[in-house]
Image 1 (cartoon, rainbow, N blue to C red):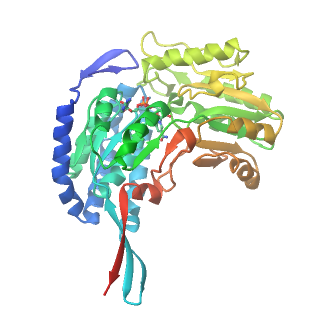
Image 2 (cartoon, rainbow, N blue to C red):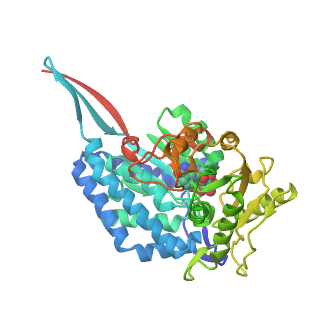
Length: 454
Ligand code: NAD
């Protein structure tokens, strides 16, 4: 498997893809090692993941270079991602004892009733490239702390990062057999679906997620899917600092080149503040620098996947053909690599693909609305349900709107934000199951009910 630098289109390295045979060998190694891993004390396993976190911190500069080279992420954003992963691991490791320890539910009449949290066994994690540290950590950290063995398939667009993660876990003290890498693309992913894991944890597109869910269903094992979104933001008429709100939401839409599952994908603005908002938003986007990800102060690097450039061009053309207006400046693009000039569109409507399909790139439609009712109807017009956001001076106003929208996450006066303490989940086409928070820790366990009679 060849890896390519999306900033230049140049070759990085060759990696040996796994075959069915090598995957089976790796599976057997995990199987032989998992029981002794889970027999260690919880404190011991937590300490190893804390060590992993410390190593990430020590090596952040080196790791961000690898991440930036294969995904095109600007170096500063690559470092931010690793630091974000560290803060999630901190929450997970600090709370593992609290949520994995046995719970005595009652103790009377000579009977003790207890819940214990047993590891599932060997779990399979098929992952995405857009935030390999963040989405990876959501799964393999709690899985390992819970005592599971892990087969981790990084995306074919972030495999060098997957290798770096694996090396660091092993250096931290995770036994080599307990954590195994599956190297390759969809064919290797497909082979993993044919194996008998005790749980499947997937991050990626709706299309692949739906396919995986169907394949895994007959196995009757847990299957969690963290999928895409078409996340809306509504700017109500009572916001005061429009410049700040515009800058905040522009960052929510375009950070990481819009390649975030929870990036802002649609914006509805009340007509009273619309003109000012569009002007401030566009100004912000025009000010950001597009260049090689290694250049200082760069905000937009290349897209990670080559085919995403033509996908976004298609969405842009479709919108323009149907009456949208491009209000942002065209940026000068480097000669080679997978670049797309960020596009801010007005005069958009829901006949346009850009307002309906996940873009997963630096393109956004801003639509004028005249009432909360209209905004709510438009926000609801999607099969996805990852996040939604409302900017307004009043908390109660935001909550009353957000309760109408079926999403796993609701934001008041913020967007594009994920933390370790809160559950990360999608509804409808955005997925099934939960990572992060106490629920995301326990997602890698089977609860066992103990009835203990003296
Ligand atoms: P993708 O679905 O193309 O690939 C994801 C993973 O699945 C990769 O590792 C890939 O090799 C593997 N895969 C592909 N086909 C497979 C098959 N038939 N069987 C088994 N495995 C297969 O997605 P992507 O391009 O890597 O990621 C982008 C998508 O991920 C976007 O839709 C984004 O919104 C979503 N995402 C969601 C979250 C979240 O937390 N909800 C986080 C990050 C990304």
